[in-house]
Length: 338
Image 1: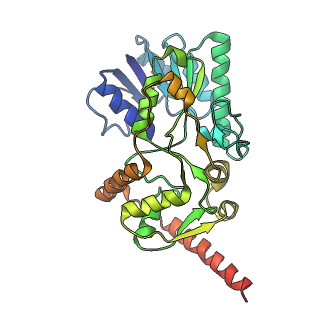
Image 2: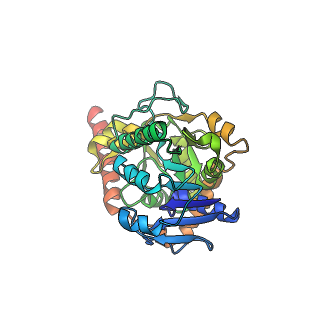
Image 3: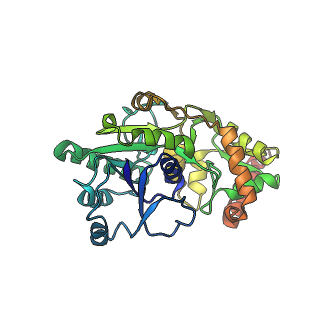
């Protein structure tokens, strides 16, 4: 198989790249070259900014692919560019959308690919929906061979997946745990969530590559494991070897008092219970099974981050904000008890 990835160095694409090379795929990555130092041997790198359409068109002029996948498209105009570049040059075009595009709030917590797409809380999700609409139009009217992939919360060893964190990543939450400081969990922590290790996601994605039954289809790829946010934070604390000191705070309150925009990522995503039905994926990729349990994957992630200080990025602004939120709740409680 001959494939081209636009991007190729993110959380999701890194695992796919690794597994494809192990299978002997002829793989090209098209990116600006800013994060290629850790790429495995055997990748063919095309160094260019995908937004420089004329340059990219010249670089791929003599190339054709079995699969082209765009991991960094977020708006319809970017897919319009991809269509101009790759129509007639690939047998399958795969777009990475998002499970946050599904109806929010959900009418039914069980999500299938037939769940309506609608997210009034988050521009990111609405843009992904618009991207999907554009691609389906090209498939129906022009035969452009698309497959839409909807990841949910996918993680790797480089970052701890969490519900509430600052703009500088999630390490500050782990640091608060290590210092026995209270950690904020949105809501009462009992809503359901699904986290997928990127190595498991890669297995499903690769099974859809070159799969004639995936053309014209939308498929989400997630683990079948469902956990509560309380369990997630307990798993992280356990991996760190500390006792969790949790403070539960209403998602609406957090969104209202945050200096960053939590409305989309929290109210439009993580605050809602989600359980994914992966029947369609398993029908298209019969041997797919997610095998990395969250507690197992989290131990690997915590160990890696503790051994690599470059991933321990502190966020003092977020730390101060957490203390302010918790102090405000304590003051409100004291006031009521007067």
